[in-house]
Image (tube, rainbow, N blue to C red):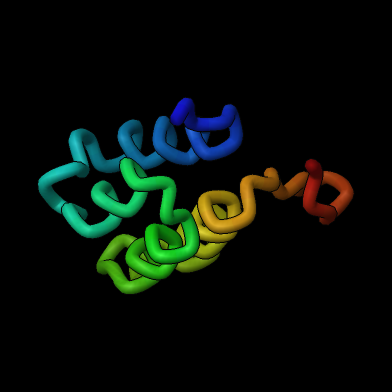
Length: 79
């Protein structure tokens, strides 16, 4: 399956901020490969990354889970 643009944007954000993360988050990576986005989002929440950048990690996890991008300007989830 091809990954949609919104989830791809989250992966780009993760790579930009943490570098290669596949080895750091093997469960998250495995769930993403299998398109199990709810489980992948849960894995992202249960990380040191989430403890360090709580709001950003929560937003990224929601985008992974739901496939919707949060618009910080109007404070709504866009389709």
